Length: 463
Image 1 (cartoon, rainbow, N blue to C red):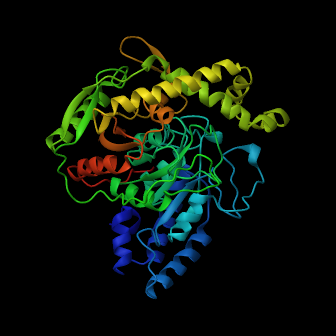
Image 2: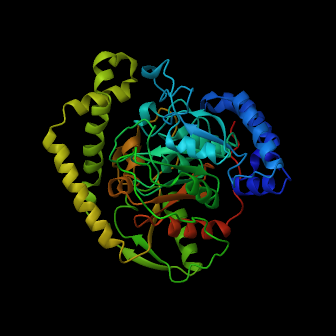
Image 3: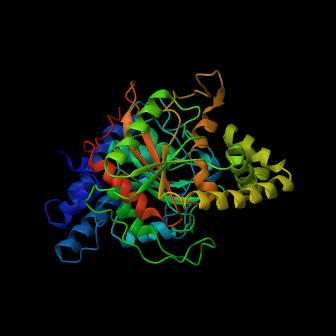
């Protein structure tokens, strides 16, 4: 096995025990970038010299006995909405041409303090306003979409051009590309991870979180990211938590909610079969399955769009009026639509969210987590605009991909996607676990226990 193939936890242990040096790991990852990045286009920019210099510094520190923890010497990729001092934050948009960040975002600063090595900035659907990341090819089939908006980070992790990555999630933008590329993605509780220095799409829905190869890896990254920051008005003051899930697989006593509505409606048959099989495996580990009714389902899509569209337009108000021609057509249409949305519709979406949060809190008193598909279909072909379901219903790709992930953004609850299978075309399928606010430890425990019953994750072919 080459160093770039190692999951974070394995690489961290090898570095800690001096069986692997940060320089060897960085060189292996950068060589992998040279081989596969021309096919994938996951990165906006690769900072190879910066990575190598930081790797040498990490190696010297560790040799001197100053080991900072499990992220020390580990190569990472950051979505190009996340500020790093002195580097561009383009949001994959011509609008940001020539932009350079003056200071680190909170998450970049925390990862740097933990000793992680920045490989580069990864592509996003322009300003995170989409679910496909059209610049980037899927790591398992480059003729298919990567998912979005954190497609670049998910592809980099799936292909071995970063050991872990960060994404942002406003309606599913961590979990959708993670599921479509066969990796782990975690959207934490709203406010758990600070967003200072991260370009916003919709401030009341935005989250920052890790994309990794294993659930254990996600726990290690989350531990470095979580914590209050007064510069983010939504930042929570929560007690420090050890998110590591432990080695056990016994889920006795865990109550897993299985939705009887919404989450298995208009879902591909292979996706449904794979996710139900994974849920049965949770039961085999001791979990008790409980039927649950998802509340207010008829309002989910309207609430998501009713919040996101006007907030996104407000953020872009100045540039939309001065340089509208620099936006991609699909994003410009959505931003202009936001200018036409009545204030009353936005207020109604806010009220709907308040009611939905209350109903979800009531539902989650009956179970410890909910298990469901992450996305209703695997990666569609690049350029495909719609999905036709078995009953003849036609749905846009964006609506289909956001439909099952957006409830966690509206309610702010944590959500973890774990790869569970591949379909007949070899494309990954993900299972989503949703829990109570600040219930990340429960999700990580269940996801890790499930992964222990599966073969070790493998990298995508990436070509």
